[in-house]
Amino acid sequence: MILSAGFGVSAAVVGLYVSHHLNVVSGPAMALVATAIFAVAYAVAGARR
Figure 1 (cartoon, rainbow, N blue to C red):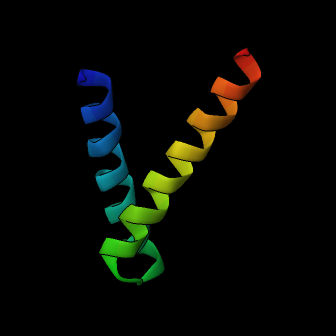
Figure 2 (tube, rainbow, N blue to C red):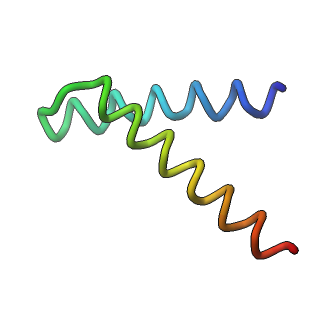
Figure 3 (cartoon, one colour):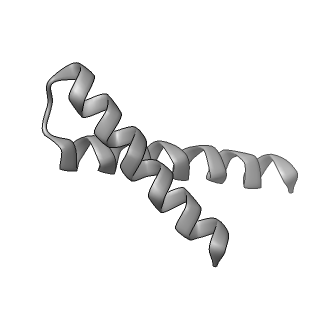
């Protein structure tokens, strides 16, 4: 539970950082970062099986 909250906070912070530097909207940037985190977690879970 704490790990998922950490991933959420990190997605928000990195999304804000990316949106500021690329001059894009912050909400979709956060969603893309969260999707990237999910994709990495999904790939790692698949590789462990």
